[in-house]
Image (cartoon, rainbow, N blue to C red):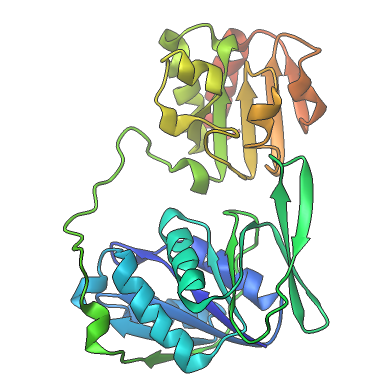
Amino acid sequence: MNILVIAEQKEGALAQSSFEALGAAQSLGGSLSTVLLAKDPAQMAEKLAANGGGKVMTVAHDSLDLFNQETFRKVVGEIIEKCSPDIVIGVATINTRALLSALAAKTGGAMASNATGLRLDGDKVVVTRPCYGGKAVAEVTTSDSGKPFFVSLRLKAFSPAPEGAGEVSAETVSDSCFESRTKVVEAVKESGQTVKLEEADAVVSFGRGLQGAENIPLIQKLADSLGAAVGASRAVVDAGWIEYKHQVGQTGRTVTPKLYIAVGISGAIQHLVGMQSSKCIVAINKDKDAPIFNIASYGIVGDAFEILPALSERFAQGG
């Protein structure tokens, strides 16, 4: 089986999600290749090769510094034609998710999104993915072995690849690949969140139990002590306490951190869909019968206004 991983870089730095994709690919065995597009990919490619990337194919061009879907689709499309992979894997970030779906449409290959598991059934790759708002899990595969199977992986669902020696190969593609109807001139960083919600190893979320926007600094202080991102329930976003980009749930972001702390969140199914795959869930709520305790790894029943400062102080001390 030939496997191609799409590595992602941002501003000349490898996205950590790339190593998650390599870990998922290695679990399948077979021949592994990685493709990396960048203005100057050399150092990043060496890092991929040293961390299980197999044969790392690079394409260097000034226009590859920032993501342009049309350009990236053309370049990766030619790489796919050269190496004929059976499966193409990337983590479901905004850019890679768009790229994989465009490639699937262009090649006529099947696609499975938001995968949380991969396994082999004979010579078929079987993808495990949540569906119906996380109420069920589906296993999907493709019946067309003549075309690539494109798979996007849920962030944080797979362990990074271990170290392993590989090789780097500089590839050339047609000049026409760099002819685009659009031009990306700038990438503007999102403000107000020091740790990106979907990529965070720890998330501290809050709901209406916090009583008002004026109490958000308590959440932020705890998040800062943990190096965590701040999340929120739909109810407080709708109430205008915090921006939508912080919303966790079916109509917001889906997160799978190692640690998820839910403060004053009752546990409506709409919210649970977006965080129930977290490795460790800590619920803080004064209502001992709140549904959130049904999925929590640990529960603290009490007044959040007493608990939050105590936790922040302890974590700030390294406790």
